[in-house]
Image 1 (cartoon, helix red, strand yellow):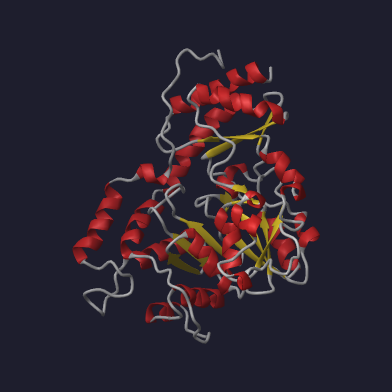
Image 2 (tube, one colour):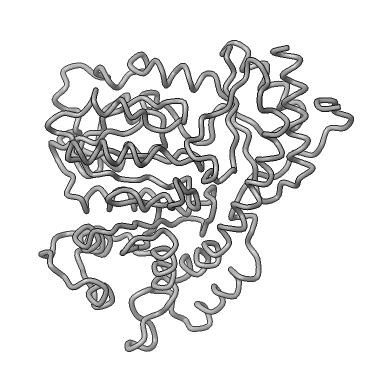
Length: 415
């Protein structure tokens, strides 16, 4: 009988790519170490650059379906490089979902522009209607975050943004392997970024990737990530057209790339595993009264590593969560993301120097648009949900147990 728990199962270990490490990662890392060539651009043989970062970029480009790919040190670095590459700077604004990770906000501030926070909708991604409300003559880009393995409605968003003359920056940090209408996320916008941090679908511990179809964005990104340089390797991919300028240093190492190359090749297998688990859970819990699920615009493209329960009554969430937790079900109200307006770096409105803050002209801070009360829909949504993560080490028995536990707790709390 569904919902009847005869024994509490051990709590599975969360995690995706990190738990899929094996011989493949070890073989590629040992190859780097044995060649003694950890730097991507040259090693013991100046005529033959080391292969790992280049191969990772090639396979990432082919996987996503873009003309160019550039490996960097982190997803946060990729965001900063992407914004600088499209020419974002002082006086510019970027629309970004209020519910998002730290870097989604701070990368914009770091290049001197102003993040403009917007509401999310029931997909937990950017609400399309917010573009009409928030676009000003200063708006240069919109950041579309594919939240936790589910794609935003990219056909509508790209069309609306481009009609307004905005760059579309796809933040795919949490969603490598997710698709929308048969296309990989990262292939829809003007430029996109991915994160390879420990908690992501595939990981080398820390790393990132920028992809684009635009040659100018690619060249500027290369210069940004390598101290303004545009080395022969990149010139062979796209002849230089941009003048040199001062850049940062966000180059990926060969060791990180070796791990990530093995991981990238495992993404389809990890996704298939998560989707199989997800389908078992959803078969048990779909249609329970008083409880709905996150709206997924393209169910076929959902990576499947996290299920979001939305309770009609926010006052019941704490009890629902506590009972699931007592049954050893991994669950929570969030997985590393926050309302930006509740974070200290937003509450102060500061950059690393007062003159560099894009908020310095406001006489009072936090100003309207940067307070919790300015985002009633986001606040209401995030107070109603419970996240159920699924991972590489979860079994079909774990999935069935999670579904039965949700049914049992539903009967006790909402029945």
